Length: 222
Length: 254
Image (cartoon, rainbow over all chains, first blue to last red):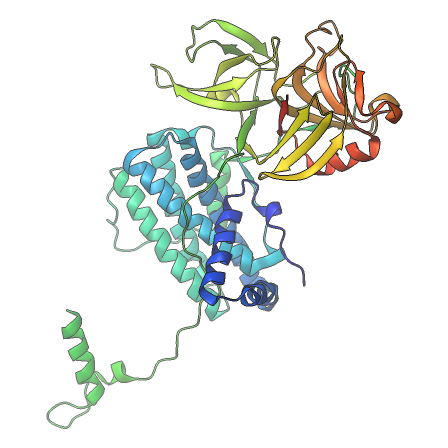
């Protein structure tokens, strides 16, 4: 049983912030540090009880949550998105970070690593931000819908449905801000994992790490 | 509506209508299993609180001209290459952002040119993903110390060697640009970090006179004013620092 190293998954520290605050809230509620410690230790055991299918579904969902959390957090940090869109970015970003923190707590060391994102300035332009936000939220809703029927554990289904409806509210909010009817369809179609991942890849937002090390002799002044 | 619905449920629970025949609402009264407790415990969403000490940098995507103002026609302050002289990505500290009259975004960056401390504006599209750093290293030229802090806490400190009076280590705010290893040169020790600081005296140095933070083959000279401007640590200290200090860390020399 090993504890998760949050830095490995949370390169910008925003989720650690959300995670730390959750722990403090637990401490305040329980009034006992030992309870928070026991809960933390209990998480990997919970992950071990997950079936392979459920772990795969949860990691897929976590990947989408990483994407959304990074997107809104960068938009908030840029301070370039103001007004109603800025408020939506702050609110939804906080929710997505809470989702990521919860997934990391449940999956423990089985959690997939957070990819590196390059949003190419989209988080700094209101129109581009809103268009992308609508696309991400609609995508998340369709992806959760597709995966829900594959989940084996009722407890995981319950959690997924709880998040699915929240993502649907986000989708409606972002659609409204972007001048699109929030709900004009009588039935929503799911999107397959293959389709979702292909769409994410097409954005070009998944970036490789910059090359920062080299095996060569320095030419510094000495 | 809720009350009406509740009434309907209550009627259904009786299980029969006024004629004593089974009601069609019997299904409503059937016992259903308890819903499962969600496997995820979602915490209360909290606002982002970065706090002090968070810095941003980004690697150049391609060579670019840095300008005095955020405008395409502004005076060129420096021309930047995509890679450092060591062949690594070229990181630039992000200091600010502006949008020009045509709606194009610009970033104010600290430039690795002389005089040290020069700043300029580059198009947003010329850099890649923003990287965040919560560490910073402070070199005290009077106390001859190097201190690394993360989230405000000291995580490493060491006595160091700095530039001699004739080749002083420049003061100012810089950035760790790269980490070099696996070379065959005892003079630099086992690991060397490149910084954006430049020696104002050794301008004809082959790689441009950049100041490094590295090990040494003369630990007996430390601490002291012994170098050509670089910051020297004992080899065991630079090895430890290499495990703690990421590329992109701001360097403050005072």
